Image (tube, rainbow, N blue to C red):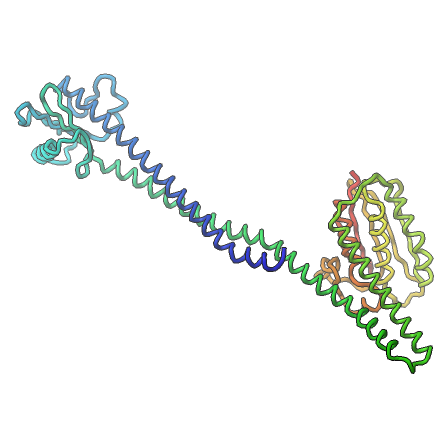
Length: 417
């Protein structure tokens, strides 16, 4: 992903989050509205049913008091608030008032309210803080009322609890969305930074040999008066820099191939492979006054790509040879160990040397990483360990570096199952 796409994604991230949050807010508001309406209507219909049953029972048996439970409706009336009722006869005169249990208002107030409700003419509804129902039975009008304060309080409590809970959930969701979007974009930004750094480092590494080749070619072009020895030196410089550039390009291609292709796997004996890679390096090491000591556990089998694992082993040993501490001893020792540990083939390559700081132990596996500027002088470009890490990851393994007993220890763990 290029920088333009990342920048576009970064700018549009807040808009995407805003649109999502608006949609979720609308959904939440609609859900709360549906819950509130359905709850309100459900309780309203239940209470209207209770009022209707209350009217019917008192119409059949006028001697029943408001607190009396009547024929088969115990469950309805047992849990209900206190109900009050006024009966009007055929002439519109007040015939009977049920206002005996904890009266909230006087009989005159109750009669006046019932009269106003009767004038409205609606069968059911809400008047002030009272739920009412009016029915006509045998020519008489019955107006029953139930205090609606508790009902409204319960519904409003449900509404605000739902709103507050939903608002808290939206805030949490918003914060989580911001965090999650940041986590999503972070790998892309990191990938772009690494890609940009890689191009910069590769250009820097190639710049030196290209400049040297160009300078020597110019000298050859203009060096008609130069001696054959000078011309030979300029040609040797061109050949040397060309070789360096070829090695760098080869390593770059190896790294790209390792990271971007899936290698073919086969069952192989990693013990024999490590031993085979050590043998040709022992002579070169001995010429430098270095001995390679080995402790290889035999017949460790795993599934892997033989060329890549061979390159992994040779890279680690070559790295040890290049960075061994010169010290004062005439003979230096590099140790290579291979063992089977808890389902893993564990390779350790140890060399005496200056301790790698803990804060740099992850960085040394990055492309072109320079712990110091001396790498340009020993023919290394900082790609070997990056290739080693890529190979290890392709084999579902893990590579780390540690330090003990005066040695830097590179540890590779590869699954054997």
